[in-house]
Image: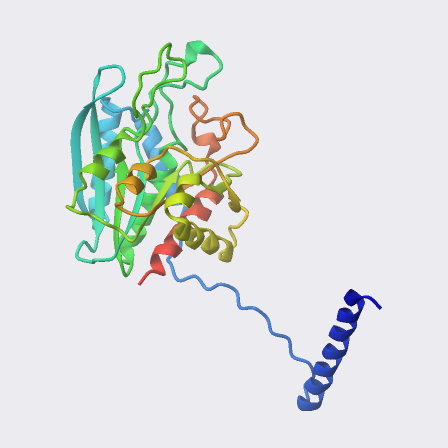
Length: 334
């Protein structure tokens, strides 16, 4: 008799003994322990509301810094945060970009319970890309994108979270930041690449000059491209490097809530995104929830940085999975 069979037989004998003891001690027979389902504590995330927030942004037009659409959308976001009870601060600055042009930055910051020492930072970029440089037709590459998912979805999920915070405050302080000028990196069709860091300029500016001196948060969550159909949120590289515990907190929560088919337990690549300067400057150990793909050349959804990044790709189920998970994470904080 080999060890495996011996082990199996022992299990059978022990199980039989336990069953006999159970029957002898309980008239009703063997009892089965059933795991309790997860009981949600956060308010219900309204995916229809989040969808409408995306549509409103897209209706303004491409939110390219320096344009009328950008200003109008910024005014809208700022006023909505105020209407949801946030203390709102804006940062305005100009930077010289890779092409020598001066571009405006408008970071929009909303805070709830600013007196609370423990703070959670939630952020997304609200600008949209001025070039559709991933278009295969070179004649279309100079056109700005609608940015329904890339920019619009993260901003919309945070707007819906802001609406919920107004109705029922969390127990910790919450800061929501809409960062500007994230998506004006050099286009891929450029003949020469200018050396320098030209992405995530709004978050870099805030990380160096935060709206509150010596700002620190317990952790941060970045939402970027969180509205697409069949989204897959992998454990992004910089997130694992700087904030592995926060990754585990979010991904395990998503699994408990039934969203494990979106939040996959495998690693993704290293993505230059708004969480990087925040991590480097140690404002908050921050995680990037971003739709990453293993079956496309870019590693992102097929419509990334194309004119197809519009409302046709937005899925309420994805918005719900992300929004409810983030809500649950912040409402379980003490």
